[in-house]
Amino acid sequence: EIQRDALKVEADDFYKAKDFKKAIAKYTEAITLDPEHILLYSNRSAAYLNNNEKSKALKDAQQCVELDGDWFKGHSRLAAALFALGRLDAAKSSYQESLRLCGPEVNKIASKGLEDVKLLEKKRIEEEKIEREAGLLSAKSSSNGPSSSQNKTAKEISPASNKEKEETTKAVASTEPADEEDDLLADFFSNVDGDNLKDQSEPSEEKILENGPSKIKKENVDLGTAADQIKRLVLVSNYEWKNLNPFSVLAISHNAAEEEVGRRYKALSLLVHPDKCREPHARDAFEQIRKANAQLNDSVKRKHIIDLINTGRKNGKKDWEAKQKRLHANGPQPEETLEEAQEKAVMKLFAEIEMKRRDVEKRKRNQEKRERDLEDAEVEKLKADRDFEQNWKKGERLEKRIGNWRNFNHKKKRK
Image 1: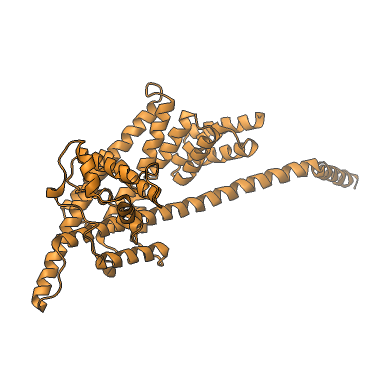
Image 2: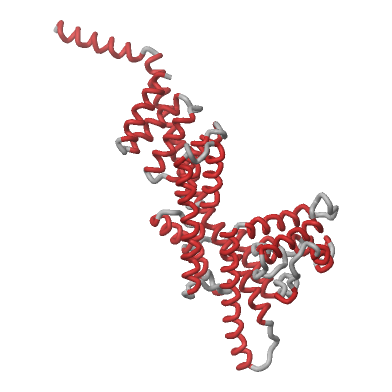
């Protein structure tokens, strides 16, 4: 313990002097002596973050929470690392947990951090809106390759720093060999182009029910049976992609008021809640409904989703009008309706964004793993060096070498 505390004092001094590399080295050495000391992980997390090693800071912060989930500062460290990595939803949750464990009067760092998260969320949404209005966000078919909207929507999940934003955008723009998720997306786009979307499309505004709780019973009739809804939600091909639009999950217009969304959620819950419905897959269907309702109850996410839908519908209309001109030039051919074209464009836009989100998250996880492996190797090397030194002293090799040197000097003097 004495040696551990001495190393911690040295590390703290290096940290105060802003020599973060030396501070990290000393904290790491101290951790090899006491792997359960929460303050060492907390301080090293802060040092990593100041040294721009974000994934390592995240790992140490996660270790703090694992060692003591009731320590408010551990959650603040975790939130700071997540915020630096651009994971705003997770950062917000961690800051909120930190404030729950220790109020804002004392926990001022978490209060300030939560404000920063909310400000960045608002800024990103405003930037995306400006870009869409300027016509920089457009959805293209999969046959033409990744669309410009894919690169622009990477901002939604990009890290807070400008440098990290550039790296993330480059990662999204680069190409990789197709994997299973690429095949799923291509299959989804193929199905969208061939499917009849009438059952999946939003109802027209004239069909939206009037306000009032008495309408829930009427909605149950309009929505059909539990089996119908379960089939629509989880038994159709590529349902996980089709259900990315929460308004589509609830089968309600994106122009519906909050009260109408809540009423539709209740009506669907009455049909498929696993406690009331014994149909197979009822639990899966209810989970889709629950997630959609949670998204639309968040005012920031709801606004962002509506903006995406409006962008998709605008792009769909533009593509449909261009297609109509080509059809008329080549003679009469089977045509899809404007509503169907707009619905397809919206579905593709949501799918493209989700695919890019998964791609960026995958890259982040791989990068974190590489950094963790490097750090683990560094810790193992320190342990091996320490064990060698201790074994060397314990084996009396040091004393033997000193003795040999003395004998050598003695013989030399005799000569």
